Image (tube, rainbow, N blue to C red; front, side, top):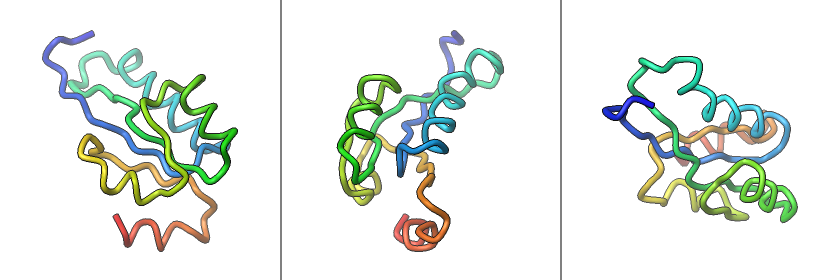
Amino acid sequence: MNGGAKTLGVGLVSVGWMGRLHSHAYLETAYHYPDLGVRAKLVVAADPDGSARQYALDVLGYAETSSDYRAILEHPDVDVVSICSPNFLHHEIAMAA
């Protein structure tokens, strides 16, 4: 891993299929693009489903979870918000971000 890489904190909205895909992509970016100069840290994932939040912690490696996406927007360590909720919810979340 490049010691001079900048770390960006990731906040994930929705831990469904697309959210899991985005999370794996963030983690694999350093492997596929070692000279990119950016690394991802999975900071907080939000999902109303408790089992999805547990999956985010146990399998994906997020440091924290919340049932409310607003916790991501307020988190001081989040630099990037990945909106993976159903499409009809994107506008509200994006406007809040």
